[in-house]
Image (cartoon, rainbow over all chains, first blue to last red; front, side, top):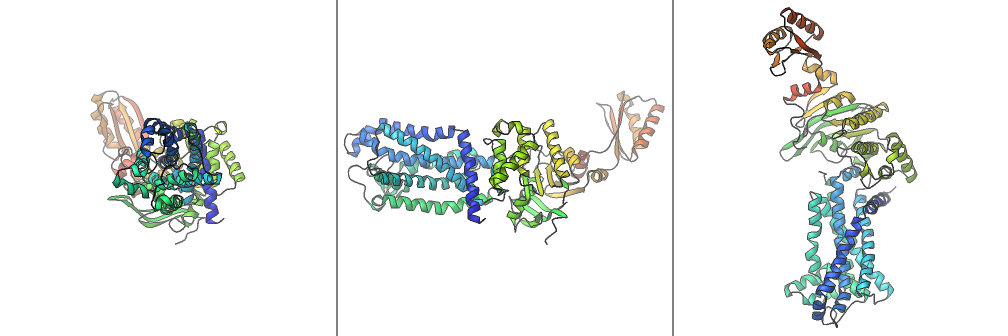
Length: 271
Length: 325
């Protein structure tokens, strides 16, 4: 068996094990969807009219709700990387990683298994969030192929974020630290972007940062593919090439964090 | 130097591992003949777990070399991983998988085909008396059952060398007896076992050879009997009826004993190390009787490994517990 096949076979076994864990502990899935639903309701109905009017697209709240959903999708899958973080921190603490490391299995498989099983969680979360979006008035207005591409970009982003989560989980000293460290940095990253408010309404000094934030690219790409764009489209290279920039960013994130996480896994010591 | 795995299953040469200023292992040489059990004994922080982690490829030593089942731990870690089974201090069991699923997963990760992994999992479930609980998530298991499952996990690939890191720490007496039984069976199957423990009794029961380490250094090595012989002969203990008789008892024991006797006023107990146990015992009783000292209890004890530990390290095995592992 070649190194690659062994890696894929082992990765599948690890992913199976992780998904059995999710199935026996459905609270995880619950947590993965309740928070974004809360965000949809709060933003859509508390800030919705105010932001919608400043966007100048039309009747306020309705426009904003359609605008918001792509941002919520990206935020949902990004926050799901916290499950990767916590999953690794837990496995480390319970000695599961030690057992894996003492087995003649592929080094990469443990991380690959985790990032792919967390991708499956993101698929479920996206289905739930799409239904939630439909209820508050969001619609896919583009073609079927474009919509599929939109979802694929979101899932690629989920996968990329999961590799960052893997590194954080393997570095964190305890499950508690992992829990907060895994989420903390996500707030500025998702708020300084086009997820909740159009970039041109952000304070000037944050606009450039937000424009080039890969998170913005993913949100803009999803909006574009779902046909949820309003008023004057955002300008600048990252916005005009949102899908391309989003895919490139994800590929770069994976290329950087996959080797880092794997290297960390080789060295990591359990408590 | 490659060695024949049929004679020596595990071997280390001058292993050193430091953490900052602490020398967790300070030049340890170890050898386990194939099919034997080596008990690695020492308090918490002695370096036992560091040794286990190096031999199971989880940790690289700073210097020195190690071979397991004929494979160099540093040069060919994957070959080592194929030959070993590890059962850890904390049962590395996935709580949300059933017992059966845990074993199936480990089999698959050892590279077994699905059918072979299923068969092996079922065999081990039966052998470790987990049949009734096989389809329940492991989180519903008792401590002893978890430990059995973890042990079973170490045996999935029928490894030639099994490493058991404190297999009974935290178990109740019943769970400990069960685990001992399993380990004895393993040995009768010809598996080589490295067993670390803080329990002297456990090493005494299970190990062919015992190595005592403290602060990263080997301080004694040999069979349980050899180690006990290092401490000297037997210990003669007796209890007198009245505390006023203690001085007489001390005088008599210092005559028949080989060392300085000691007395405890509160329990009225006097004890002394003796060379020829039964002879000294008879002599002591005869003389005490002649002096009209009434003795309420008397005993002759072989030294325990606790005595060995105390005499080797100057502190009891339990004393340093709770220190850094």
